[in-house]
Image (cartoon, rainbow, N blue to C red; front, top):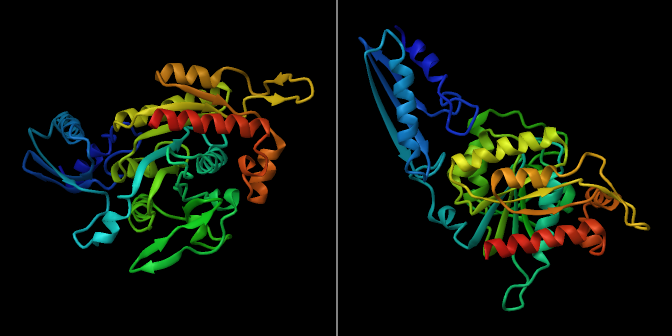
Amino acid sequence: MSNEVILDILKKVNYPGFSRDIVSFGLVQLAEIDGQTAKVILELSTTDQTLPQTIKKEVEDALLSSDSIEQAEVMIRVTKSAGSSQGQTQQESENLNGVKRIIAVASGKGGVGKSTLSVNLACALARMKNQDGESLKIGLMDCDLYGPSVPLLIGASGRPELVGDNILAPVESYNVKTISMGLLIDEESPVVWRGPMIMKTIQQFAHNVVWGELDYLLIDLPPGTGDAQLSLAQILPLDGALIVTTPQKAAVDVARRGARMFEKVNVPILGVVENMSYLLDEQSGKKTHLFGQGGGATTAQSLKSPFLGEIPLHEEVRLGGDHGTPVVVANPDNPASRELNNVAEKLAQILS
């Protein structure tokens, strides 16, 4: 039996909560065969003390299922953070110390308006006051590296300023501090990266950006359960995840599966928001449910988490995104703005 055969066996072991295997995630540092003994060394970053033992058992079971292997020696090294090194500066490690709450905004399916929701929630929270009557301090990290739309939606422009050795200052728009791949590359440049580069970039967004004092840092995730989601769960101490769906069954089913991933990595589900819920006739008050009805409530019930609200379809939401002026800022009295502000208030109450 060759070492390549050992790797083929390990490719059948998925990282808990993900459809990706531990080999493609880059966790395998050594995989070799010595007689009939398989020797494997894995390296992962996690704060979940049960995860290494879970992966170790699954690897051992997979190896011992082969008739050619009688013994399996599996060792797991746990590092502090994905991609971290001993040379990481003290400033880098302290850049998140002033952040009180970190919230992931996630969806299983693309096209549900998650980035639009993230931007408007960030702006809605930035307009709220704390107990001392001061405006809340908000940050927004765009982790959708392949399709970074946050800068357009929030009207952020210009390059982040370099304020130290490999340290960036986020761009501020509508009192929201923002970092995004869209602020670092040309508009026409595609991001063609494999998993390790994604993990490294998210680590840099977390540790190499001067976030300062923040009440909330919102993380806009790409759809699905892949490298970005895993990196985030490893690198950042998440206080919870907000799940975004639309009413139709296809979106609901995928959102539910995506949310289960956070449960696997011990991140609580803060609530579910249903976007594009209905078209409102403001004259008569009649609601037309173009994409079905009740999907968000069903998702929340299945996940045993709060249902935070239904955001209606409205042209001003789209116009605000196109022009870089979020609807909660451009027109706070818009029906969608009122619902978004209600969601922001409920979220703040849950996290308080």
